[in-house]
Image 1 (cartoon, rainbow, N blue to C red):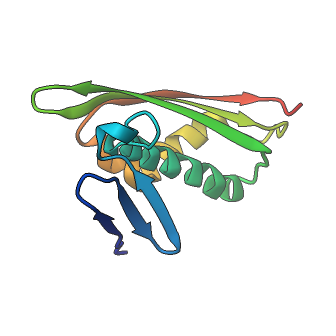
Image 2: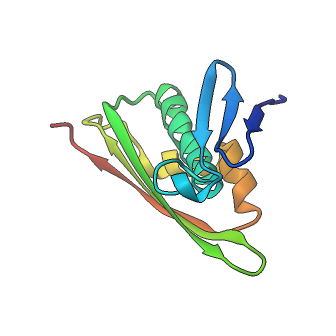
Length: 135
């Protein structure tokens, strides 16, 4: 598979990523540092999107149902050279399904996640997956 995106920016303004029919604005100036995501946050967002896509994918393959998921991702930025390190995630799956095998789901996400596997070549990833009953 091959992927393609486009991005553009204007001097002293912010930038946008063009993907299919979506436009994702991101900050490149200090004026919007508190409002728009920065490149590091987009990077972590891509990691999160990979994990959530795989929850959906494996819910079908592993035959479990869930109502929603929430995911928090934290990372440390090292200075020299500038890079991400020690990514930690906390994935919560809201499901009453007894067929949900958390250990197998975690193993599948770690084995088959494209972004997950790309990132783990350059930094440590750890995290937890927990099941919560629907309310």
